[in-house]
Length: 182
Image 1 (cartoon, helix red, strand yellow):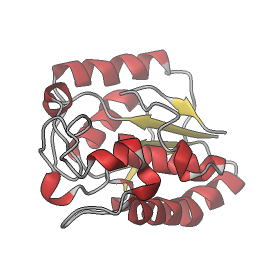
Image 2 (tube, rainbow, N blue to C red):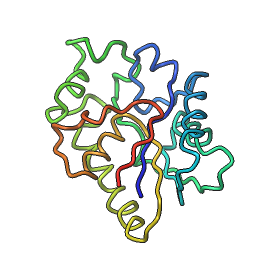
Image 3 (tube, one colour):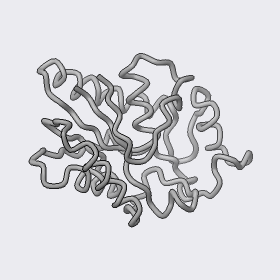
Image 4 (cartoon, rainbow, N blue to C red):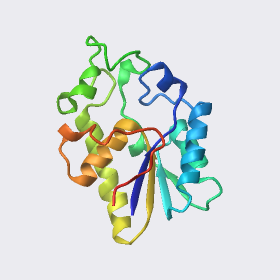
């Protein structure tokens, strides 16, 4: 089985600031979300957890898994999308003058910004992770948990389910909601 979860809330989520590769920790609400989600899903079996190396994902994995003896492996391919010079931007989803806005409205036509990634870059990075790590382990019958981020998880979900990029945001990646992909 394959499961995926997005990190808990951070202060930047609450302030509507674009996080990307910025290494922002969970806030108290995010910690409680991860703990509660872990309790709610305590009977779901995981052989292994793959996690973004960013602090908010690492903390979520730790709080979600609690005292379970599940190995956690960090992988850079699970980091959030790099939004370059726009990381930390406010109101990026609603500000028509912010070029990152395109990614949230029309990801197929988002070509990235200075020092950042495009949708294609993100899709290639996460596809490589699925092809080289996840799919072989699923064939072995392993139960896998991925702890990541909104855009990176959306990319993984689209590719795993064979959906086009126009469906990129359809799953609605909520903080700390465990999604079973297969």
